[in-house]
Image: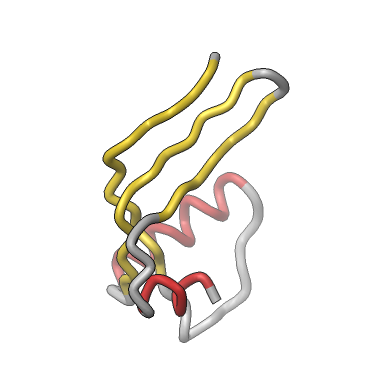
Length: 73
């Protein structure tokens, strides 16, 4: 669903992390990529942090060109 929103012309995207009173938000222009190398790198990074995802031949990656950083530390 997220990729569909980006492909439909979503102009901005934000990812955020909250840890008690500390928080960080990265904002920018999103792009959907189906490039095999980029998708493989995203899967590798995901697996390192969480777990190995299942096989999905339709998998894509959403990349955000960050142009605004907000936070409180």
